[in-house]
Length: 358
Picture 1 (cartoon, rainbow, N blue to C red):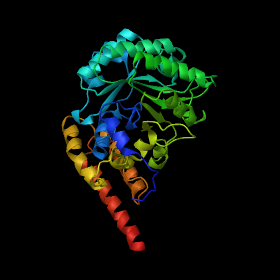
Picture 2 (picture 1 turned 30 degrees about the horizontal axis):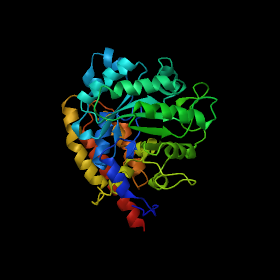
Picture 3 (picture 1 turned 60 degrees about the horizontal axis):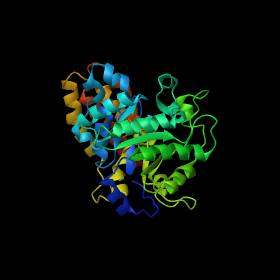
Picture 4 (picture 1 turned 180 degrees about the horizontal axis):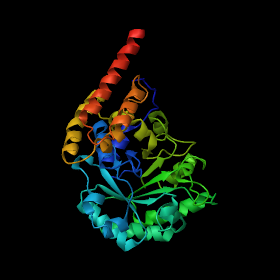
């Protein structure tokens, strides 16, 4: 692995906070719809013991009326610390679902105030809630009254035409007064009309300074930063002063962590000061084999697990071969663990071939 000259980081401060706070402290992997399911989280947990992992967003309606709690709330004990992200705006429903999340063993409840999708806006879910700060504060207070685990909010810095910091400040002030345990702030605003969810992740400009300003205004509130952070080097910069503003308490990575999952192998050391050897990719695979075999024996399909592992060899010789072989074969009804084993052999062969060329 390439050595990186990381900026100085007060790991002790992160470790101390980590023991008594929320996913807004340290490192977390973002909730991603259709991606961070239970299989993905199990895979990610083989790479890091300490990072906070998130469920996909689950709507209160699905939990209350879906008549399938194992589907919507089921998870492995090995996920922990794991966050249940809820989508909703009715305080009573959110409180009910938060309590269920606690009963099902989640470590934290998070309210989604960031998703810009049209389909959630129509149900008063996601980023549109930013325009209703009193309601969001009421939601947080209702959930806090029902659970003994942290309640956090993941939000954007604004929506649509909003260009003023004061709007964000007053939004956060209401949440702080409601007792929120931490905020994860995506440093972009969201356009509710005119941009797709993908474009909303890329087009609105990043305002990292606004997140650090919020930390300056609310020094006792745990604040994590999210958005456009594509390496540990960039992430760790936010644990230092930023433009004469204080450091934040946590960082959240999304697609980078999903598409290049092996970067999670460094998290425990870099963010939590855990002094242990970095797990190898080969050991990750060995850890996954029993899980995959159990999933297959219970009637599951290989692709349901393997699709989350496609980036394991990202950046290495054979990485594309690994991805291609699994993509072309794991979807078949009869595909078994041998698909993964053969793909790994192809990677080893390619690495050896490249080494022989030197």
